[in-house]
Image (cartoon, rainbow, N blue to C red; front, side, top):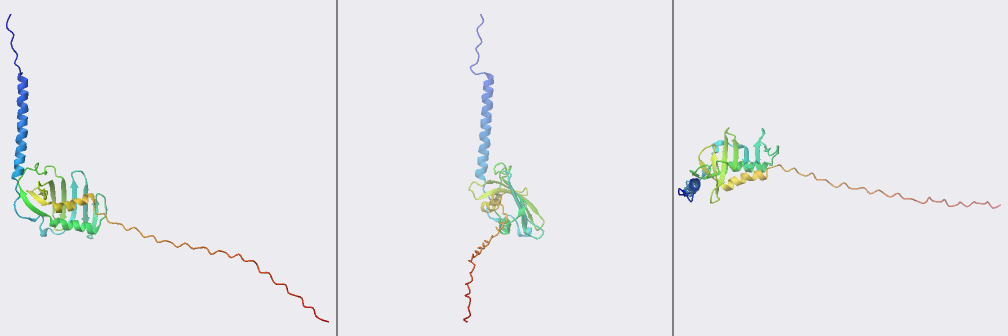
Length: 219
């Protein structure tokens, strides 16, 4: 009787599965290490400058869209009056709209970085801003993740290089998404109408004429 062939303790298929799993784990580890290294080595260039130059002119239209689907837009009409175009068309609060328009040219660039878009959140931007100026240009600003030290947002203007924009200035504009600048309609004052008090009718007892005594002549 021929001797039985001994089966290996671990099959070839099992070894293949183990090797493939090890390769997947190693690949994931390497990718995470690469991302962490890039993030750690990302040092923004020194200096600070404005995102937009004065020759752009005045802001005419601001549209902000979030990745969640929320949007807000304010624009000047033909008379230069601010109107709300989104989330609904309505009259705009002129002071709030003008404050937002003044914030745009005040946006500051903290620095530039060289990072993959997926690391800084620009592959799927959290916000998209479209800004039109009186000079005739319209710019698109993509906003990604907040920086590790929470001082700015990673951003990309018109598909250019990745920059870090001051967080405080951007947050001031983003607040319009949750608090659109609707014009406040004053509530008309209702004055109280005095109620006239009816004059009571006087019910008088009719006067009774006193009897006149007859005068009798004396003969």
